[in-house]
Length: 230
View 1 (spheres, rainbow, N blue to C red):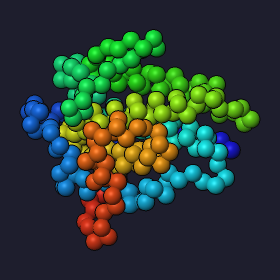
View 2 (view 1 turned 45 degrees about the vertical axis):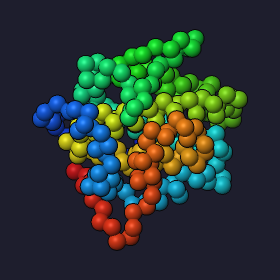
View 3 (view 1 turned 120 degrees about the vertical axis):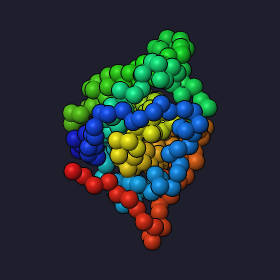
View 4 (view 1 turned 135 degrees about the vertical axis):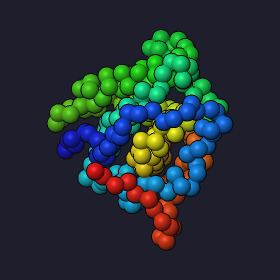
C-alpha cells in the first residue's frame, strides 16, 4: 500500500510587512515559552495516536510517508519567515547556545549562514525523498538497507530548521499569526521522532523545555487559543 505523501496543515500567509523594530538576543530568548504562545495550537488531536504505526502498514512505508510530509510542512513553515532569515541577520545556523555546522558529502565541516544551511538541508532532503531508489513509490519496489539511517539524517536536519525558526524568528512568526501552526507542527514532529527513535535525545536537548511544554496535553479545562482559518 502506497501513501500519497504530502502535507496536511494549511498555512494562511499573512502580510509580508516586517514587524517593527529589530530583534535583540534578549528579546528573542525563550520568547516562545511564554504561556500565551504555547497554548496556541491548530488541533486538539492526540498526536501520539497520529504517529503510532498502523497494524496493516509496513514500517518503512510509514516512515517514508511521515518523513516526506514533515519535510514539506517544515519547508513551508520556513518559507513564511525566509525573507527575515538572511546572511546579515543570521550569520550562523543557531538554536539557543548551539551553532550547527554543515558537513558535505566528503565530511568536510563548514560554518555557513542560516539561509545557506537551510538551503543545503532542503536541497538534500528534496533529492532523497524524490529518489525512487531510496523512497520508492511503486508497488513491489524495496526500500534500501540504508533507509532508516537516511531517515534519521533527514529528521536531524529538519529538527535543526525548526529549532532555528523558534530561536531566531519566533517574533516574526507571531507577527504573521502562525505560531499555532508552528507549535502544532513542532509537537507532531517531536512525538513522531520519539516514537521511532529517529533523533538522538542529545541532539534535541537544546529545545527540551519547549518539547516538554508542547508535547504535554493541556488540561481539559485549559483555555486553548486556536487559529481561525480564513
